Length: 413
Figure (cartoon, rainbow, N blue to C red):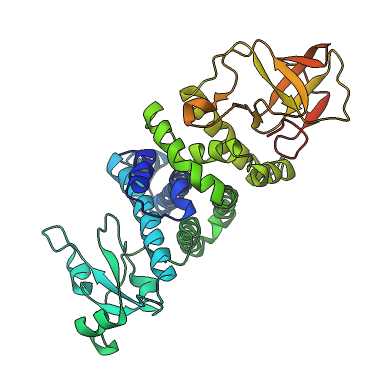
């Protein structure tokens, strides 16, 4: 099941998930990036160990090269599958925890439940049926998942149910720790947990090999940058009441077009189709030419392109309105748009026609919305102004005038 299919399934079951559930692919990308960087740290560790061994044993450079050639740290498919399933489980568990927190006045206790079959871990079986108050510190380290492919879960209980089943006293709490390197905390966003894990691994290697600290710091900087980009993107894809209402239909239609679309890409299109992409625009426009800003913009462009491929606009000419009453357009001007722009017919604003538009933009009618979402970094040249109508066409020329997409300066919503 792809991430988008999983989102669709959760919606069909009326399960309310936290916003990051709609950004599983962003977390997966951050996880993959972090894993690849930590793999390079492991390779560094291996090289330094091999070099030390070679010096100690009096080996030749040829011996050293042979030892290095034997390494080849790889990320097998099973590991990558673990990474994805971990993201899903973390997001699902955090969603369940948020729901339980919202309902704790009526159901203030949680019970740990393990799947009692041949695959269950003995340590997880020890925790089965433990009952503690929902705000007990126990749940900060023992909320499932507590390991790769953990299938355990928690269920909320009323005070009456908890008393009848028996609240677990302190002296009967199993002394079980999460798997090594596992740091899921339900109150903490998943992307921060990835960063925390990476930090612990990097600190360990830096302490072990002081000479490698400069390289470790560069890797740490890149991991933090990727993590910051994930956090900033997810934060600005926060669903409003309006976008949460229209997202299920858009997800359903997007699944029918291409099941491999990223959930965050569909969420982004939903934001712009509702005219609520301003926070993302503001962040990108305010953080140009920065490492984190460039990574967010890269995500935006790739996401847009993937949805555009599945829901391409095929008309030769588009008609809409330009909300720029005090601006006089002249032939030859090139209008630049830096972020996705919603273009559709409105009751006010200057009339605009975009010619030679075949293949330009996302046809929102294919996703249950209205209008066309024009691509980021689009340039439109004014080729004619006649009878109050501004005629434009796509061009590769440099922009002479820039408009923002959702700041009330471009296309009327």
